[in-house]
Amino acid sequence: MAECRPMRETPLASLLIREHRRLDELFGRFLAAAHGDHASGALEAIVGFDESLRRHTAFEERYVLPEPEGRKLLPTEEESDGTRVSRELRLEHVQVRELSAMIRRILEESQDVGGARRLAPNLARRWDRHTTREEKELPRLEEEMGESVAAALREAGSA
Ligand SMILES: [Fe+2]
Ligand SMILES: [Fe+2]
Image (cartoon, rainbow, N blue to C red; front, side):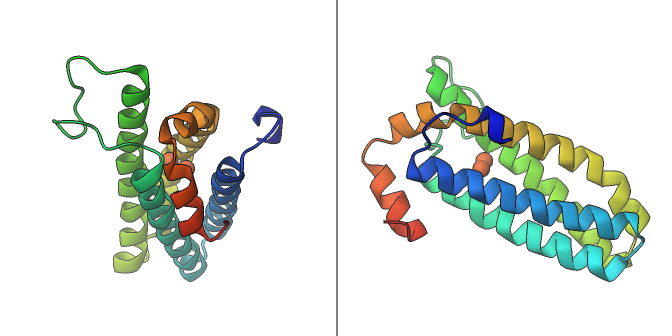
């Protein structure tokens, strides 16, 4: 939400926040189609959301959320706040991607709009909570990225 944004957004923060809003819009299209019982429209919208979500989270995992040390997504004994935040945000990615894939699958395999609609609030809640938290943590995450900010922006085509 605009009122929660930091006063001055860095180029990387604006890019990621713009992508969040774009994903919100795609998800909104899916909701509208699902609530209108429009199976093909709902499928088309969730495919767009799912693919953009995969690209967006892969980019963040490559550049913004450092690889957790040792035991993948489980906490290590002594982890810094930054490492904990990264690990938890990565874990939220897994959960959001799973839900998005489930909705996509039930629409692809059985055109079950009712089933898709029942899963939607869970995905909406998790996605919203994730992006709110991530946007709040962005200044700290970006600080920890150091020089890889430039590489991230190069890959995104913004520098
Ligand atoms: Fe994320
Ligand atoms: Fe994100």
